[in-house]
Amino acid sequence: MHGGGRRRELLILPGASRSRQYHRGIDTKAPSTSPQDTARRARVLTGYRPTGPLHIGHWFGNILNMRKLQDEHDAFFFIADWHMLTTDYDRTELLPERIRGLVLDWLAAGIDPAKATVYRQSDVPEVAELALLLGMITPLGWLERVPTYKERLRDLAERDIANYGLLGYPLLQTTDITIVKGELVPVGEDQVSHLEISREIVRRFNRLYGPVLVEPQPLLSESPLIPGSDGRKMSKSLDNFIGVSDEPDEITAKVRTFITDPKKIRLGDPGRPEICPIFTLQRLFSPPDHVAWIDANCRSGALGCVEDKLDLAGRIVEYYRPFRERRAELERTPEIVDEVLAEGAAKVRPVVEETMKAVRRAMNLA
Ligand code: SF4
Image 1 (cartoon, rainbow, N blue to C red):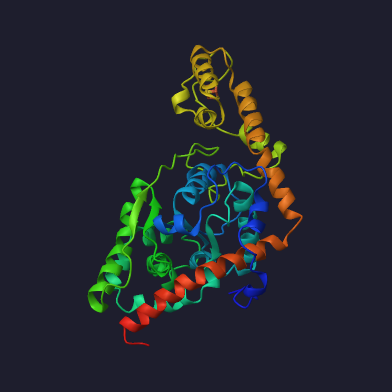
Image 2 (image 1 turned 60 degrees about the vertical axis):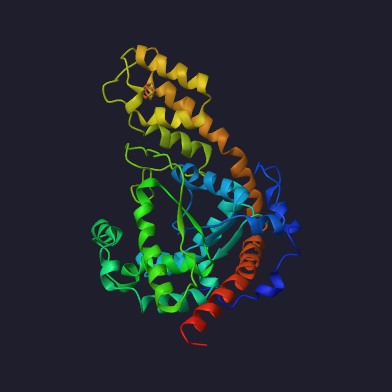
């Protein structure tokens, strides 16, 4: 673990003004909220494993939603570095750079520490304490029946990851939510069941020791399926992604490798945009009238795939230009990362301490 001994107090920023300067020119819509406003809003929590640079799938699946959440809720965003260890415990040398990169990505993308509490999981050691306590009351069968455990073992069969850490992943997730009194957790419709085990653990705790923990509810959020170059879901592990901080040449080269309608071989052949990953991306990056034009001209055969791909690549390059520029600017002040994490750790600390006091008291441990 790293970062646990940072001198947080010395790095705490004076109010929100310093944080705001990370976001010059970013359209994050609503103004920052007052503490009174925040008190009326439901607390929403989402975590992010530091797996490497953000790609377009993350952007449309998570980042845009997080920007909305920070305007509409009492948002807690954390970097789940302990969760990373469940599969990458033998690659911890990658963690510092990945965490740093993720903080810079978030800031450049418009995540605002003046609106949301942005912190790192390992800066909250009480998470380990509560995970241990919840582990005492969580039946093994509940963990074993979570499908993600077996899926991960299957997907990463070449790795030695059949450890307690991976099996206990849902328990750690429950801890992350409950230790900050998270009321809402953003999930896609297909992930509602993933939250059920957390709700069950909380209910069991509250039955045994009294109503101490908040039972989280799912917050259904849209997460469009973003195809990668091979037509499957865009993902780093499939190496079919376009990174949001990729350089323009890299973006163009990657877009060129995307599959299209296999029946449209040359200019003049009619195509089927509805099965084409390039068309799916055009719908995200182009205005509706241009999308309609592509649809019509692909079907008639007048539009060729090479022309369409180059058009898309140019739009992606332009869309992420402000992001790339902001990120480059942030890179020039690397101490920002430590400042943001220190500020977040200081903000989350009183919440965590309150929860842990109540938990210890309820379990006769204090
Ligand atoms: S013209 Fe465009 S939408 Fe049509 S198949 Fe080719 S890349 Fe896809």
